Amino acid sequence: MTDKQAAAAAVLLMADTLASKFVFGDVDHLLQPGDLLPYLKKEADLDPEADVLEAVFAALAGNPGKIKGFDGSDYEKETWGKLMPKEPLDGEKQYVAIIGAVFDRLVRDAGGDPTAVLRYADRKGMVKRESERRLRRSVRIGKIRTQCVVIQIEE
Image (cartoon, rainbow, N blue to C red; front, top):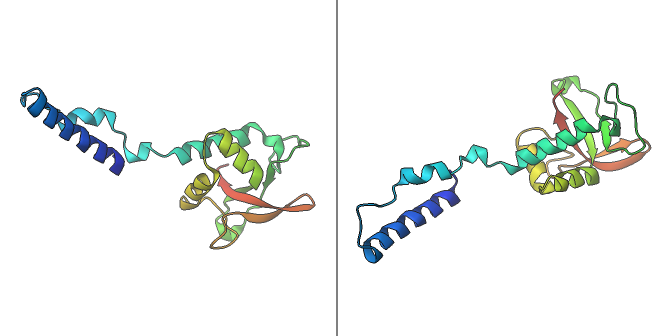
């Protein structure tokens, strides 16, 4: 349960107690904290950034031809990014560089905030940063260098 939910539940319990006592004159049928539990969500269930990030990965999986380097994909004219080469010193993790504007559009299309989703992915250790302060990296896609979100994907 989040702090906001706990505060709202406390207000409901207090309001019920006051209304029962002073309006209805009945203190035998008060709401109990356990009565509210089914309506409160666990903090782990409240992660909208995870849902939006999953939608971004679903969009990438559904459009493999827009990512240079995906195996078996026919390269399309529109490019969303490119598959980055695995680095042995980085634990052989697989990263994809998504053009920043494309990442932002995919996140917004899924109902999220690009900055919040990128920070969430960074907290999960999925983002390859440019520097300590910059979450996006300069990547060459074709002959053009552009700002990209370089994010770890599962194979």
